[in-house]
Image 1 (cartoon, helix red, strand yellow):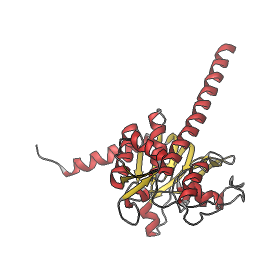
Image 2 (cartoon, helix red, strand yellow):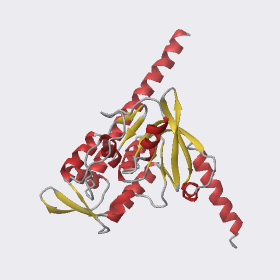
Image 3 (cartoon, helix red, strand yellow):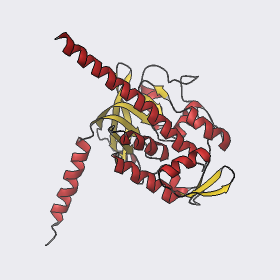
Image 4 (cartoon, rainbow, N blue to C red):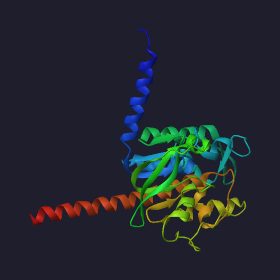
Length: 275
């Protein structure tokens, strides 16, 4: 059979557009496909929720690919190792409380598991704004990353969701937008982005999980974005906290989504009873 170039193009465009259109309205949108965002998405999708990730770069995985200073090995603690084990990522004990893993195996496995669970990842797309309804975030505004890089004036598109997750890490791309554009304060001590502090792995690993929570109406922070938002320390190439942060956020969002589903079911039952 002779391959037709135009048919190859048609297949790619049609399949991509179907994937895109099928995800214009969903449960959770995550900005940033680093380890925290991917872990959050994995657990949500595993529970059957509709979730997609928009990643501005071509590559997926954030800083985990490079390990520490391009030595492609990462460190996790005891709690983080449990998630590595769940993802079937090989780890080696280095010392008491210290485990290492190949960073390429780790992030490629997390990404693969997330996609196989049903997560849709759209790379080379940036979140340039949020959608607002009565001071509640109800989705994101997106455009090709190349449009931003080239400085072109091209109008964006919008995608609706019940919740939005800020997982862009150090830059806090979504929160920067919220701080400038929306009414009301962020849920921090100052009402503003507090900024990350210098390196302290011990503190950073703990606070990244503690700071994983809602930061504006329907907007949550996860991973390094959580520490940068609430003004605590960065932790460098130790990644257990990132995955634990993602797991914690998925639990929070699943609880909220289940609560909404139960409430909607009761409303429907009430209408039926009245009739």
